[in-house]
Image 1 (cartoon, helix red, strand yellow):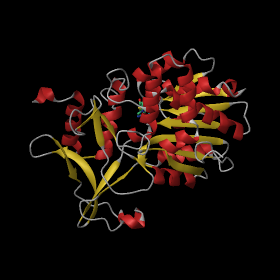
Image 2 (cartoon, helix red, strand yellow; image 1 turned 180 degrees about the vertical axis):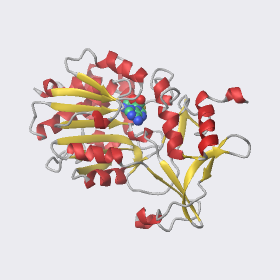
Image 3 (cartoon, helix red, strand yellow; image 1 turned 90 degrees about the vertical axis):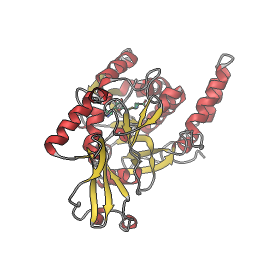
Image 4 (tube, protein in one colour; image 1 turned 180 degrees about the horizontal axis):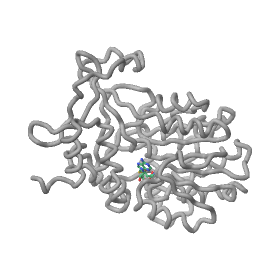
Length: 368
Ligand code: SAH
C-alpha cells in the first residue's frame, strides 16, 4: 500500500505525525505549491491531455476581449505613459498573448506596458517565456504580487484565486471548529475537526449564516491578496478577476479535486491532482473596498463577454475562417457563455476592483 502513496502524501503524513491534524488550508497549500512535490510546481496542467482546460485555452476570443478591456481602462486612467500590466497565474501565457495582440488597435497602449507575471510554477514560467518572449516589451516574473513595484497598474487574474488555499470550519454543538486533515481509522488521510472550537467565530460571520445547522461548513480565504489588490489599484489602477464561485458569501463545501478532466478525491494522491475551491466574490470585493478601491460586479462571465461583444467577435472570426472552422468557433462561444451545467457562463463570474474615479467599466454595464 505504501508505494501507492504520492511522495507528498508521505510528507504530509510525516507532518501530521509530528504536529497533529493539519488545517484544510495547509493541506491545500502543500498539495498545490510544495516547493518539490506541489501540483503546480511539477507539471503543466493545461497542456494537451492535461487535467483541466481554461477559457483562454478554449478560444482566442477570451484573451482578445480582455485585451480590449485593458486598453479601454488604460484610456480611462488617463493613458499613463508607463503602466504595469500584472497577470496572476498566467498559465501557458495564452490569455496575455491574445490580449496584447488585440490591444494593439489602441495606439500607444502596448508601448506603455511593462509586463509582470506572478507565477510559482517553473514549468509554466518556461512556457510563458516561450509564448511571450518575442513581444517587444519588458517582462518580469515574480513569485507573489507584493514583489511587483508600484505605479499605475492593470491586474488580470483568470482562474487564479480558486487555487489559493481555503480554510474550512464545521459547525458543531459547541460552536465552529476548523476542519482538518488527519489519519483516519483505516490508516488513510481523512477529514476531521479540530478538538477546540474557534473562539468568537460566529461573530465574524455574516448575520444570515450565524444560525447555521450542525454539520454546516463555512469556507474562507486569507484576505491578504484582496487587500493587496485594493491598495495597489485605489490610486490609478484596475484589477479584473475571473473565476468560478458565488456572488454572495454562503455556506457549503466546494473543495474539489480534478485530474484528467474528471473529478477526483481531494485526499487521494496529493500533489498529483488539482485542488480548488469556489471564490467568494462578495468577501473578496469587500476586503478590497476596505483599502479604498471600488468594486464593479460580479457579473456572470456570460454577461461580461456578451457586453464586451463576443458575439460580434465570433461573427468576424467566422467570416474569415476556413471551411470547417466556423463550427469550432460556435462551440467555443457556447462553451464560454452557455448557462447549462456544462457551460462556463453562469458559474464563472467577473469582478473588477478599481480606482473609485474610474467607470463605468466595459463589460460591467450593458452597451448602450
Ligand atoms: N490563468 C491561466 C492559468 C490558470 S491555472 C489560464 O486561465 O489558463 C492557475 C495558475 O496560477 C497557474 O499558472 C499556476 O501555476 C498559478 N498559481 C497557482 N497558485 C499560485 C500561487 N500561489 N502563486 C502564484 N501562482 C500560482
